[in-house]
Length: 412
Image (cartoon, rainbow, N blue to C red):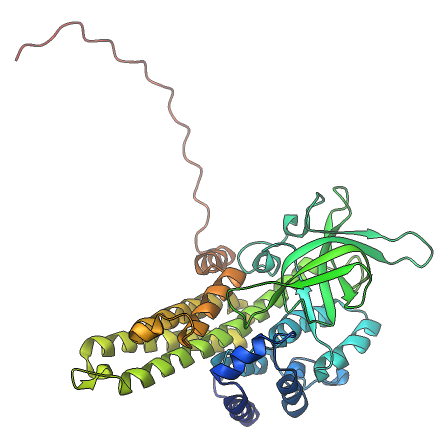
């Protein structure tokens, strides 16, 4: 494994950090998330046209840059540093791989070029709070109840009557990343009832009749979510009915976990840097509080944790099969860094409006969406076979007869 970055990757990092440093301060981020779209459209167009950011993982034949997932992870580390609100994660990390893996030739030719150019954004709609399950991050996604399971609830799909065919969807997805602003929805729906039960993916356009989208109030405003209601909505099947949708979702989950790990590491590193800067200029008892030994030890431990998470994230970008473990370590580092930032900023750090809470909210929201950490690690351990099931315990012996009652007292 060659862990050194190429000249092109260093240039992507430098250019992206320069642009975001000028356009994504805490005040700009707070202003962007309160717009209707939930992000700065002008900045998104600049990132798409100048850097080709949404097309990093799109093949060149479809108008993309044709880079490896490692390049997307490297870019997301920089966007994580400033907590950039954008449709990059939902579009490039979740939807583009699914369209590439499952889409027909016509679908890929029609959808991937505008997605790579940034003019079209997409969102993955999974019923209920089951995004981590659907992506096989915290458990096996083959069970199927997360998409409806043939019963009421989730999203159900049925073949439309008539010669033109097509599909109709009905149901609800309550937590869809960027679902309120995405031009295209990839909806995971259950079909086939009990006899031929399966989960398929469908394409739904934003102007489809019967589609209702409502932005939700979330803890982390930089991760906007929407409630999607499908009321007999016409949809187009992505790929073919015999495609292995669950395996495609799991493969997408592995790559997305590596990208999310890099993004969380970027956020954790920036939270640490801001805290170090503060303790070096905040004085108490005539000296900077950063000179106190107790503060030095806490920050040193945090530095080691963040750098270990960064190493794990870089390794996962090279080998996405390790994405789940890297994501667990990165989320834990971000949670610790955000907590220490609030603590070491003192009284001002505990105010809800302080910038340190942006990192705290991101840490809490990401763990709710893609974790929790202990389930990420448990699933990774199960897949690796670290803890094989123990042998069945031997049969218990038959119950012994009850002791005869003592009829006499023994004198002592």
